[in-house]
Image 1 (cartoon, rainbow over the protein chains, first blue to last red):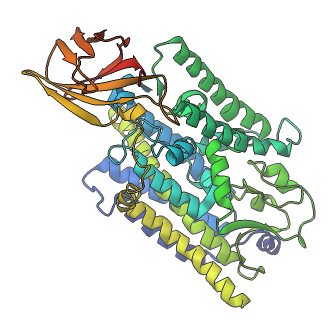
Image 2: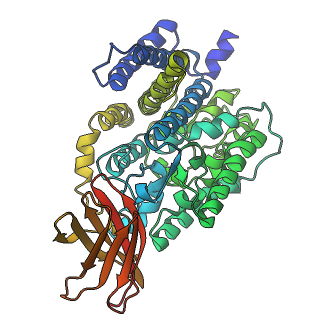
Image 3: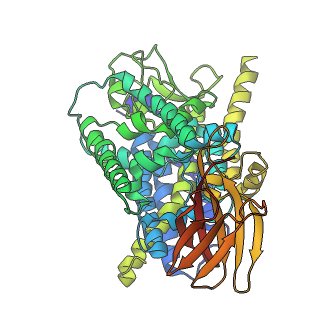
Length: 385
Length: 147
């Protein structure tokens, strides 16, 4: 059994090697989450920080020790997404009194910039040399400049891997796609994966034509768990109904029914844009055809519809590792572009896990820290705000 | 040759982690670098455009932005001029020459937190949106593009 397991999963080999490899991540967490200046006088902060660090450290250790990636990634990813929504909504309610924004915030250019907007600013930025978003360039929470730096950085480091390791929305449909053990529908047509590219083209063109972020305005289902326009007219009411329906359909119902991340795989324009970055990204998922027995488990398990009929990861692979975990013969593995052979499988996987998990702990870990602080505060004081 | 290539590829992969950490740690510096790019400014449709004139009155000031006719190419048929009203006031009645051509264009009125624009020339001005700020108000006056 042990031999079979070691053939199937790429592991570090022993518990102490895994522990040694997990230690640098622990240090990164300590430095990045505290900013080098932990506020040790605040008990709630200390408890939340300790819980966050232990939680992510255990997940990273288990990833290294067991060789399973997706199982432990998903736990951190889903929990962090829920915590992000909790802390974001609570912050909004304490600052504005509700989850809604009005013309006031729009006129004052105080809307937080979300990575999704990147898809809509490309054409106006190229042709008009301006950013079509009512946000702050450098100041305030989630400024345009800072978010664009992060988006460019994430794209270079992980390509579409951001969708499974860093996106604070992705955890929602990832979580819902895991609620059932078996899909209620048969094989989903591969062609649906190209729909996100159609969405990217539509969103980029419509935003350029109207000079407004059309996806945010009309289509983004994640407004349900972040912020949305105050209902002051029939148009805004229709917008609200549309995004609520999209959330229920694409993020909740269809992922439960199909066991796929339908919103991320077929509807998210940002995912399509990051897929293009996959082309230049150094981390790949590679198939060893000499080991592949054609069982098609990778295809059935892939939540992003990214496995081809030849069992190769396509351009829209988010490097979540579910196919690697599911492969019964270990034919799939993380690899580095430009390298050959399987001698350094462990090294390749470890080199991938560091930036991928690093992105999760730093980007999502800070959200988890805030979320935990709120929960602890709620337990101690009975109030979230 | 293969070994060298493998070594280089693994080195680049290892560098990715340090690059990512640098993105997080030095993002204010990277943001400042990014701000040098020519497109890093909010579109006038949202920001209101640059302030081109200031009218100082005894109890308040009016900052008049450039007129904006948002379009991807050229100008649209309809646009607006944004006026920032700074001062702790309850009501105003001010004459505005937004394009600085020496002729008054409209009268900006405000009472009970409601703005109104009364046309002086042939352009159908209307104060269609406003909000409060820390220092006063922002109001946008819609107009036709006769340029």
